[in-house]
Length: 338
View 1 (cartoon, one colour):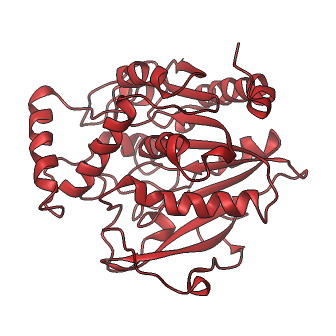
View 2: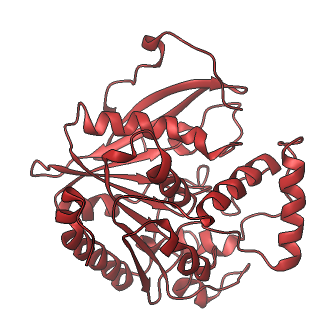
View 3: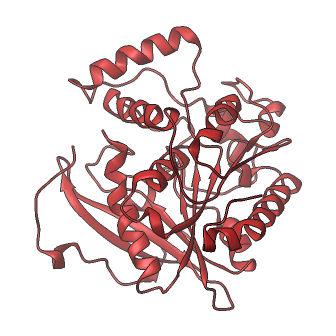
């Protein structure tokens, strides 16, 4: 539920920047949002500035059952002249508070409030006029919808979507069940879904299993958090808006793995494919985001492309920064991409 309760502005002022408790070398501040039916709501803005003062910035949005932990992503952006910012959305990661339902929402547009606040800080007191919005998976869906209709969409000069969640990755019979849950979600939003996130993906990432990465399993659990009919209804509503076609004004890069793999149990193939989403959906719906869309498939890429094997993620960064170099003058002037 989105609260319409008014509070004094001072009650919702962001906290000052302070050392981030989750990642060394980063700073974080709390963005106080209007409360909802579970009580006080916050988002968390994380930053690390480039060594040389940068005129450009990037704002990163994580996926579902996720949070920002990819320090090497910030390093790549910093090295290429971007001040780096990331949002842990309400009820995710750094922003999850006792008594809250992890990752829960009933309308993706609720997240626009923290995007508005973050962009206001980045373009206001932080002084950036050139902003790249970078979204992964569910964060990619939210980022695309915001770039189309968000209050501060005009301040976004480019959009990079890493394996965005454009459609449900379900066989036909589970799609029928999902439709039932969507209908029930209008009246029973807290109805638990029986489907969970297969452990194969997170096991491919975390160093305790088959991966190379260290992250907080309380914030990014192996089987994901419980999801609910109201959340699924919100996701499907957002996907339907996107699938109908958007009018994103800025240049858009959609990057995804070359192939998908259905695997609930880990196997070596999980290290070389998207085991969460169907990349065909990204190819199908990506061109409808706007007039200036580039799609790139990454051989051997995983679902979160920047967590793929080192040679693969280096290719991801090379493609990303080459694209940014090509489009930056057009993003500033509004000229079409050639």
